Image (cartoon, helix red, strand yellow):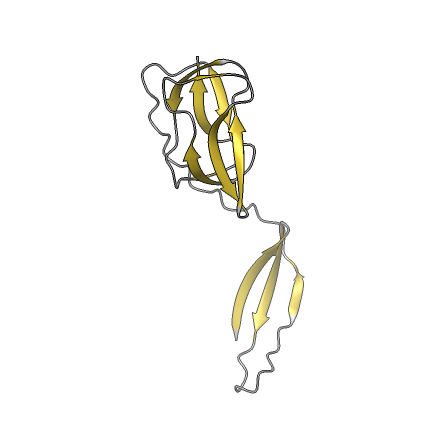
Length: 125
């Protein structure tokens, strides 16, 4: 028999699994739920070095995904609503646009990077 702790939606359950004789029938009695345990913290990713002229206007990801394309490299003048970075999420290409007029001061990601919602993608001046 093996003991496991399984967490489902933040609730931890202690489970005992009895190894069967190969007939495909496994017995898994469930004990009372254990006290909720905090989910392990994800390791913090090392921050990317921003260029010396990093701007004060942040361009952040609205969804998690992968960086698909850089639309506006450093030094490009952009208008509010112009795409700066394209991210791919669930097989869709999602443009991340400039929140206001400005010039791209830094690109803080590279094509292929996995990003989380709210991640800093670029800055504008």
